[in-house]
Length: 234
Image (tube, rainbow, N blue to C red):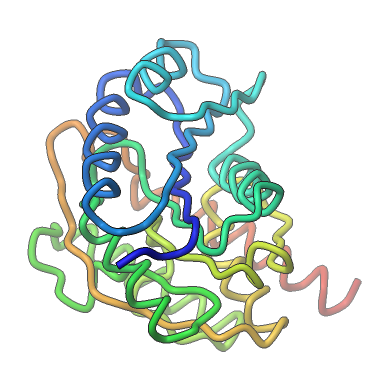
């Protein structure tokens, strides 16, 4: 079975240790999937060998001169995907947290459902996640509901699938990790169809050392609250 053109976007900052394996594994999964795909690594101002390792592994690399944040790197990758005319795009983390087979499953689910945005949720089945991570993610999902009225079991997931409409219309204003929640807010404003599907949570010692801490949730909430107030009363 052949599908339309898809791409996988991997925002990366100082990920030379893991990015090569992530790109190769994703290439292997795509080659057996029936999807015609490209892997795009957005190097967000890394000072290590992230770009070189990603290119050697077979990825198309876009490099930010300065570190601009996960939200900005994701926006760059999705803009590239829109420009190239991809029918579906996925985002995944650069540290090996996401399984390539879950990305492929997301493409299949969205192809069948016709949704505009599909969130890969680690909390539908949270086996493999630490209790601290579960608590932090559920807390931010609750904040997302309180501020924006959006129900999501895993509002901070980095594995997301985007339809062609989302690539064309979905935009956000924050550049850090708070973009994960803001994206859902903007999708709601645009009346995009948003859904979730279960994915695995893969945590190695390396990925745990690279992920954002629960303390960063305070900064995320502060930024989201400021943005919400600004747009309500600005």
